[in-house]
Every structure is written in structure tokens, then in C-alpha cells.
Image (cartoon, rainbow, N blue to C red; front, side):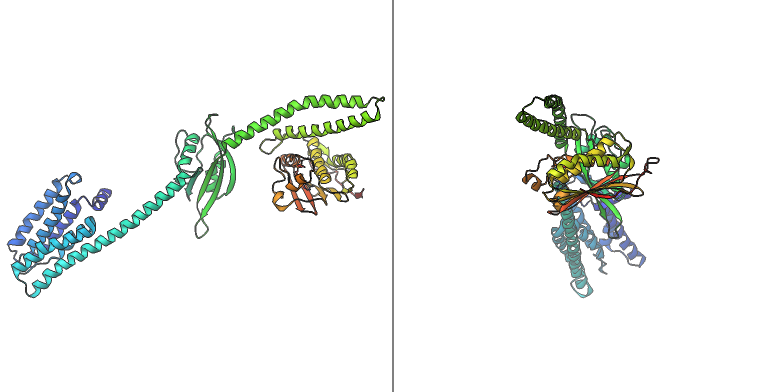
Length: 540
Ligand code: ADP
């Protein structure tokens, strides 16, 4: 009901409500005149009869389909009725003129003000002056009525023009905003402080159709066909990007798959930024969904390719390795052949390491590697790695200092742990020019094991430091100096450390050296080493 009234009032083409207002005011004017003891003359009496008639007639007209002139005629008729009400020897009040004047200004703008002026002059001021005479109070009243009517109409016309201009501007700005949101190739969602979706661009509607085939309620955190990076595990409520955003979390690159059909599903990289009000309270969040399906598929293909090629290379390599060793065992080999076969054996070893690095890289899933943990004396493993590296260290004319406890038993995967030490030590050897120094430290604190491999080599620039743990990354200066490598060692090392629940960090200064620090937790109950003892530094 209230809504109907509001619509009627705001709908400028429907005159029923304004006409009712006018009729009531007109009858009030007449009633007050009677109460005041005025004897109504013919003009006002005719008006008194006509007003209800016009009101009833207004109700009968189907206004939405009525021609424009009929609306105009109705308002002009109202002005005529006011003219009639003034055809009285006492002159009568013409204040009511503001009602049709405002309505004309409201509907027809400046044109309405002009119509008001002409109609008032012809139907109110003119007849008034003729009937009562152009003298005394009547002259001022009659002329002021016309002026007042035009001013009222103009004021309303101006206000309406301003408001409409402002509204048009807002609508225009909103449309420009929507057009921009729709042209970008990224799904965009804006959430309010309650987690309700307030804006969703066209691209994101496509993603939502895949993620929520049965519809979406417009509130953050709804579960759907949204999967983790592995493409199989469904994302739970608290891991849904929109839910995380409503908890005030800001993140970059949360990878999800949307949709279950392998042909149409998309991989999305989601980022979230929180919006805060002036008091710093959570006011909503903006989420961007980037389609990375092609990249993910290419990555999958690459990894499958790497895995199968490495696998295929393994068998012939094993046989070359085996037979070279066999031939090298023969005592009757001429020195030259022995030397040449030695080169073959060394290169086969290198190739073998490369292939196993590639194979392992393909096995790393979501940054983690499969482990077979057992209670291991890692101090012994570190010593063994150092012993194996000694010839290379000596060959590269480097000095070595170690600080390793006699024994340190921890629950790790021994093979993988050795790989960590080997990778870090062999990098230190590779990236340190002759005359440099390498230090290997293994220590234990109350809750963790720390392995430090330090060198005084070429170092890593600040920019490269953030990338050294990425697959296939090689710092430009390493590549420039033709130091061998393919950029897999540190990514595998990090995957191993992460899988043990540890952390690896690097500090470095270009031209001065690098320090790699591995920390593994000791907090698995019953697996804490009791055999640790501080080691003595030993220089080589
Ligand atoms: P690779 O040594 O086979 O290139 P890694 O993954 O072990 O691959 O290392 C990645 C990159 O990090 C190297 O190419 C090199 O640029 C840089 N790097 C690693 N260790 C060191 C080090 N000790 N000193 C200087 N740079 C290093």
C-alpha cells in the first residue's frame, strides 16, 4: 500500500494523487470560508461543485494510456477552478495556485513554468481583475498570484532538473563501472561486511555457473564444485576463498578448480584484498579470479613429459653405467682407454643425477615429497656427505670447516636428508671460486635441528634470492659463468625440508657468499634426540 502510494506520487505521468491533494485543499478553502461566515458567490459555488466532479473523472481515466493533452488539460482546469474561486467580491485566496504550479514544474520543467504563467494570467489574474476591478488589494493579490505561481513552478522545475542530473550522473558512473568490470578478463567479486555478494562481473558469472550448478545464494562460503589444486579434494567451507576473505584474510594465488567435468572445468588463481572503513573495521572484500587453466594444463603436460622421458632415460643409463664399470675393472686396459672410459663414467654419473633430479621434480606434489622417516643419526649422514665432497672441495681449491656433533638422532628420511646436505654442499662448491671457504654446521637446540652451509662464493642478488627455490631457476650470473646446473637442486631441497615440517632460508650478499640455513622440528613426541652432543670445529 505505502509502496503504491510512493509510486503514484513519484510517477509524474499519473495525476490521481496530486489531483486528490488539490481537491482536498480546495474543499478545505471553501469550508474555511463558510466557517468564517463568508457567503459564497456564484464563482466559488460552481467551483465547489466542479471539484468533486473533476476528481471522480480523474479516477475514471486510464492514465497510462491517456494522451498528453488530457493531463495538461486537467492541470489547466485546476487553475481555472482557482480562477472561479476568486470570482467573489471579497477576492478570495489564490494560494492554492502553488499546487498545479508545482505539479507543472515537476512534470514539464521550464515549459511547465511557462504554461503556469500563461494559464494563471488568463484564468486567474485576468478574470479577477475584470470581475473585481484593478484597484486596491485586488490588484496586488491578482498580480502576485501569477508571479507566485511562476516562481513556485520554476523552483520545483530547477530542483527536479538538478536531482535528475545527479541521478543520471550516478547511473552513468555505475554503468561505466559495470562496463569496465565486464571488459576485464578476470572474475571480480565484491563482498560487503556481512559477506554478501554486492558486485559480480560477467566473467565471474561464468565461473559461478561451473562452481555452483544448482545456483548460489549470494553469500560467501557456500560450498559447491570447488576443488583444491589437486583437482580432486573438495574445498571445505573454511577454505573457500570468499569465506577466508570475510575473515579478513588477504591472500594471493589460492589455486582452485571449479566444475567437475574434466572438459569444461577451469583452474582459477584467487586473490583477496580487504576493504576497511575509516575506523579500520572490516567493511568488505574484493576478490579477483584469474583463469590459469591453460597454464595448469601446460604444466601437467610438461610434468608428464619430464617424468616419462626421465623414466625412459633411466634404463639405458643404468646399463651404460654397469658396463662401463665392468670394462673399467679389466686389468688389461691401455691407459688412454681407461682415461677415456673414466670420462664416460663421470658423465654418465652426471646424467644419472640429472635424470633422478628430473624424476623427483615430477614426483613433488603441491610442494611436498613422499618420505620414509626413521630414526637416523643425521650427524653421521652429514659427515658422510662431507667425506664424499672432499675430493671436489680439494679440486676446487677451497677450505672446509665443519662443526658436527658426534651423534644426533632424529626422525627423518635418511636418503632425502642426505640429498639436502649433498645439494647444499655441492652448490657451495660450485658457486665458490678457488681460494674460498666453506663451512658446514649441524647443531641442535631445545626444539629444532639446524644445518648451516656457508660459503664465500659469488653470492645471490636480492632479486634472485626470492626465486632460487623455484624450479628451473638459475641466477643469470651463475648461467653466465657457465657453472653447470639446471636449477632443480634447491627446489627439491626445499620440497624435502618442507615435507619434514622444516624451513630453509638463505642469506647472501653478491660477491661475498651465501648462507643456507635448514631448520627441522624436533617436536614429534618420542622422537626427540637424547644423544646430541656439541661437536668440535674441524678445519681441513
Ligand atoms: P643449479 O645449481 O643446478 O643451477 P639449484 O636449484 O641448486 O640449481 O640452484 C638454483 C640457483 O641458485 C643456481 O643456479 C644459482 O644461481 C643459485 N645458487 C644456489 N646455491 C648457490 C650458492 N651457494 N651461491 C650462489 N648461488 C647459488
